[in-house]
Image 1 (spheres, helix red, strand yellow):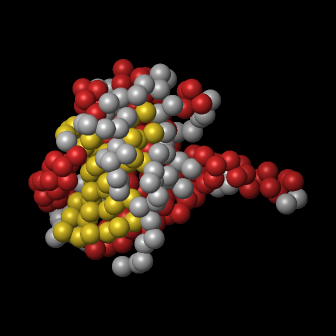
Image 2: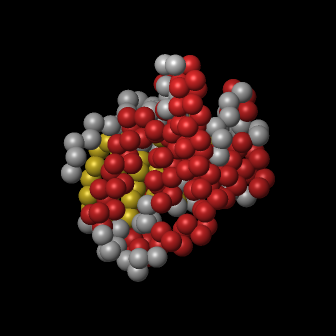
Length: 241
């Protein structure tokens, strides 16, 4: 296995436990996104045609992830198409059950990141789930399709158009997460679910069936990534850079 600088990897039988380790707030910069994408490819090969499941968690109780690195995005127009968009697509395309342990605050791009997983367990004692793009005047094309496919319409509206800060209890009631429990209960529950659902991938159709549910966001994320790359490339050529 590769030497990952921003991920801590632990294997427990047919379950991979991945801990994000990109500082205290786990910003989804290109480096972290690429490491996760690389690991997903590795895990896919390791599981092969057998059972398997993936759990991803934050490295502290304050943040699961503080979203994309906005400073990097401002300086690097390829940050989205090289990192964030391919990451979301890679998670949606991973043909095994996936579980996000939302250990703390989940802001901005961390929201669609967590929604890309099949299941979400949130810290009930600490942390908000909040996507404040509407208040910051920011637009990430294609993200709405993921929210629309994962959330009830009223909840998607509150997340995207109101920028509401959901507590763990509110997130559970709104259908954003599947469980909201005390911090010490998160990992045992995630492992219980992983053991319960890992065999569903063995028949070889788990990824195909998930794609039936997520076809629109997968296509939008892939096409948006390509469109951004081509647009910037044309601008660079036109400018003679």
